[in-house]
Length: 205
Image (cartoon, rainbow, N blue to C red):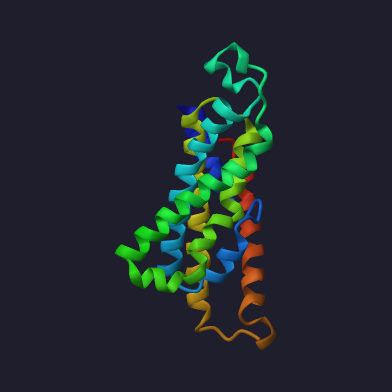
């Protein structure tokens, strides 16, 4: 239980997808103009990460890895389908993104309109694919751990985009030099927030 809680906290603060690895920056920079829109996209990203990581974990360990198909019989023990992992991971992610897009369009048309092209672009959000690739790299012991990591990574991305959106809303009332207006000041603030989140790396969790 302690290891699971530690993984959850680390995935939010220490291994934050935006501030530790700078993944998902295109959506992060483009949609973080107001808190309401940022919250909608952040929840969508969290949902997709939480749902796709356990599915990709099971695909990895019960279908794709060498010997993973041994449960079908001894004659399948030598089959290695790991070369298909990237394609299948993206297919799973795209399926869930399509589901999210349909739900948002039906029940929150205003949010759907404000997100525009960035809602379907969750399918190619490198933070989501990065979560599945980190899952491969870290070799989690079970599907529950992978799910916790996916949920924590989504919460970390959600906090990052909401924090930036709140700051950018306040910046609209600030006297910013013309050369830094827009993306200029946003990049500077992102760097400062990244350095702030580095302080969590010293915590013994």
